[in-house]
Image (cartoon, rainbow, N blue to C red; front, side, top):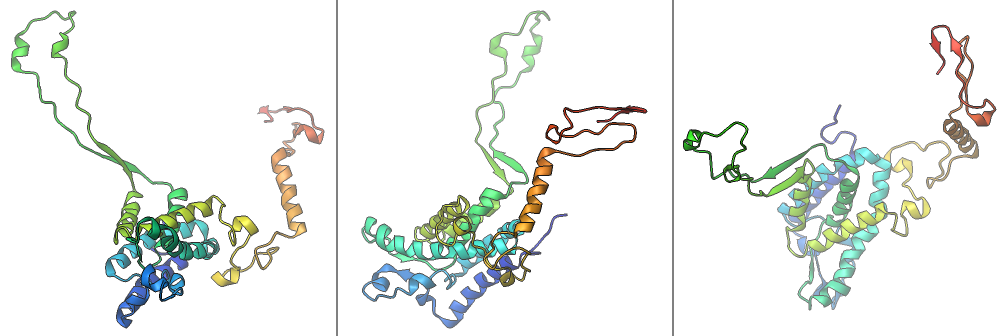
Length: 314
């Protein structure tokens, strides 16, 4: 049975509440000017480098971005259902340094000089983190159905009643001139049930064009790099780091260390023995009058079929 709403997604629910709540707090306290980044004058000459750490966690500065960000968070709840709370928290924590520091650094050191100081603004809000999650949604969540939207055109020429007066033999094929013309090519777009999610994300990325494109693109690239195990540092692929189970309200499994270490030697040996048995396909099926069969490596030879009353042992 399908699970609806935010059931079994506590982290997504918290992110949704934070996305809306932080934007409301910025408006109530009238501190929107402290959230966004202008490379000049914030970074130089004023040296307000703390903004590079606060711009993503401060929240959105207008209601339109907050609305579409909340809708996108709701659509991405299936990622947490597929991963679980612990992996979801690990992903957010390990990608947060990249999604937070890369946009302002690239804007100040690369994008702004290349644009001759015209691109100077970075809007606030967790846009990069949301697009990193969107990359996981794109890669791991399959579509449920697909549909096509296209244009159609009716045929301009229809057979007239005068054609019926022409007497032709049943064995004589009709002339090529009277053959129906093929319909002209039509424009067809293939869509799926995931299209609405991408439309919401596109609306968020284009809300403050072109300033919002930079964190959106960087967040997508960070998400794909995390999935390809290319991120250094705290990435699970580099050192096996995982968020401790108690942080997300789970119980540590037996044999796991504080940092998500390997299983104990006895448990590893038990699973290795089970793997060997499954790969060998060994087993002896006692069916009374029949013979047992098993893999050749156990000394039982090739497949043996023993006759029993009423059939064969398979």
